[in-house]
Amino acid sequence: MSGGSLVRAGLIVSVVTLLGRVSGLVREMALARSMGAGEEADVAVLLLALPDLLTQVLAAGAIVAVLLPVYQAAGVASPESAALFRRFTAWALGLGLCLGAGVWAGTSLVLLVLAPGFSEWQQGQAAAGLAVVAWTLPIAIASAVTAAWLQAQSRFVIVTAGTLLFNGAVIAALLLAPGSFTALGAGLVAAVSVRWTSQVIALGRVAWQKGPIALVSLPDGLWRRYAEATGAAAVVFAAPLVARALASLASDGTVAVLHYATRVLEVPMGLAIGVVPVVLFPKLSAAFSANNQPRFHTLLSDGWIGMVALSVPVAGTLLVFGDVAARAVFALSGFEETAVSAIGQSIALGAVGLPALGAAFLYQSALNARLDTRGPLIASAVYLGLLVVSGRPAVAAGGGAGLVLALSACQWALAGVLAWRLWRVHDLPPVSGAMVAPAAWVAVGTVTVVTVAGWLVRGASVWPRLIAAAGAGAAALALSIGVLNRAGLPLPWKGGARAL
Image (tube, rainbow, N blue to C red; front, side):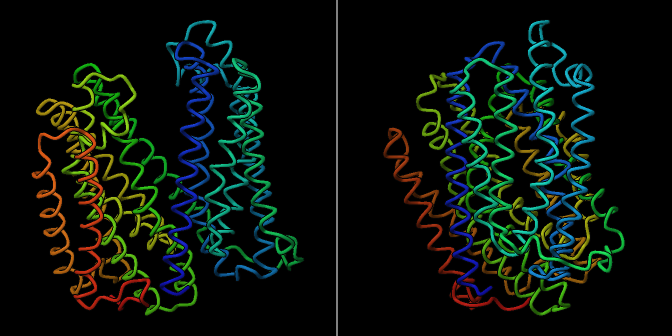
């Protein structure tokens, strides 16, 4: 894949991701219309969250990280790869059926853990819904297997569009049978079925090629790597729960402030910064499978240039204009001014960690491509441990703002541990010496541009500050690209970057 192809793929993924996030907002509106904001809504949120949590931890990230390199090694369009795909799909369906049966049989235990404060009526309604939702698990896990094969072929659009299709089916269920938890559960089953069906159709006849499955041996350590990748995903998903628990130690409303600020910060992560590792992962895996170290170095360098060019301007803009982002997003929420200000402050402090998260995702993709799932597991454990240790003193010293700042610091530690693993275990420098000075100039230039823009519109109303924020962000992005180009670092869309 050429540099231009990487950029085009990234833009397409960003657009489809944006549509998926918009459909998510529409889904929340449909949920509010169907279930309101009381006891019924609490049950509906639980039904929507449980399958997503289990599949994200057990399937989505872990399966893609482990199986994509296996598909690459077998040849993504070969009969052997197709045979492996069918074998993995059968295993995924079996695992999902076991998990689904466990949730179905143990709904009371699930509710005791996740919703101990539910009323008797809520317990009954949730149990009925979970009895249906449990059967989303085999389909969702099988869908992760299919997604891994599609990503191995660099077919990102249909995978990313799965969120849009999923939300569409859930919206239909909410609008067609408002207030019915059984219908919502059936809608979730339909949603995962539609997503998986679209992926299987996209594969075409290549998925059913006859391959010598008896001769296709699985790589050593496959199940160990899956367990490690699952553990890393579980730790990452536990971090927000720990952060919310720590936030509850602060004043009332801190949990909500953290939640809303995180939702805003997820937008640039999903639409821009997080796209780079997603697009590069299949190519990094292919380079490692072919034992092509120069190509691996070049792709990693491409990723670093893209990360710096995107993450630093976004982070700098939100650091100065976090209050503008909060007011723009929550203008119609009816929040009090103090709440909006607190959200804006949390957005600004959380932006400090965005470049670290971008680097961490890039390094994790590189490690997974090299069949190293232990590194991300170790780094995730360090990340969570630091958050647990530093979170309580941070809350005591600075409340919600102190917690967000501690969270950003832990994200930099996460990136640091992954970089150390890449260097010490795989003899790959996490960044070239040629990148250090340009990256520093990008950071200085970005802070200067956005700070001046913020000073010029100080005291202005929301709209002038919003326009200034957009202009400053665009100017910082242009400056970033100009600095990197002038430093002699070939940008991805102008050809391959130099090797690290």
